[in-house]
Length: 120
Image 1 (cartoon, rainbow, N blue to C red):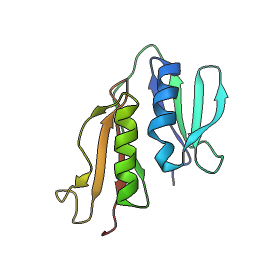
Image 2 (image 1 turned 30 degrees about the horizontal axis):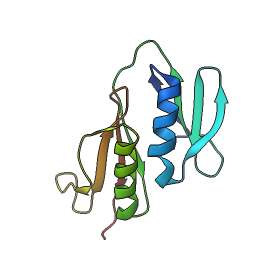
Image 3 (image 1 turned 90 degrees about the vertical axis):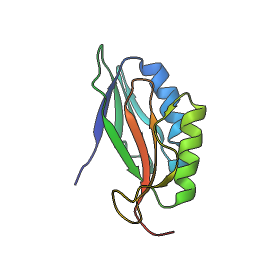
């Protein structure tokens, strides 16, 4: 079981603003900050971190959500926060019959996804 993960970002302030807005529909917010690092989480525990770095390697992170409505809300919020569309909300039957997700690139090019695996 994964306890937490971190993404390297080149502009911590810009990434904080992006993730505060993009992850709000998932119930996430910044819950812990250190010099060079910000932890986001729901329920007060940081499980998704962004850390300042001079360079990054694009990474894919998928957040499991509880409804297709939240997938849509994430996509809209992430685009409004400055993310770039990498796949609008919809079924991805090439993964499996009920895979419903949306994909957005963050300011550093990380592919961030919200997904639900249950039927509608």
